[in-house]
Length: 193
Image (tube, rainbow, N blue to C red):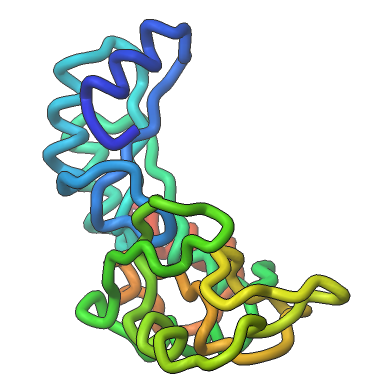
């Protein structure tokens, strides 16, 4: 959910917990407010557990959200660089090289998901705008149209840099490829003494 009213509607529909997302998120963005604002308003509006999402990439951020009252966190961008993830290696390299200043909210990668704002690497937006042609690549026999919302995977061929390279503002924390277990360990911080 992108707002407290959406969260309340979900609760009224019978949801056992609510996930709220801030505008800092990578990929498709539901709301237009920062996560802290949406989380605080949602915690005041609903009486079910609330999971926080959007721009979360460090143990300090996770701890801060739990101290605000989040029951959990949902993290995406950090795990694109997990060894278990099937993201294309050039996508992962682009994330490792990027900072939050290198991300932008757009609707350009909306050929198959129109009118849906999403945060991507600015370099992907610039590359797709320069790209001439209707097909930017392929995954097996499927021809990926220019500005598709599908991100590149290990099996993707073509102009990888001109595809939907989703990235949240937490991209600052993506500095190396690591296992999912290592990433989780970093996110929960060191064990207590």
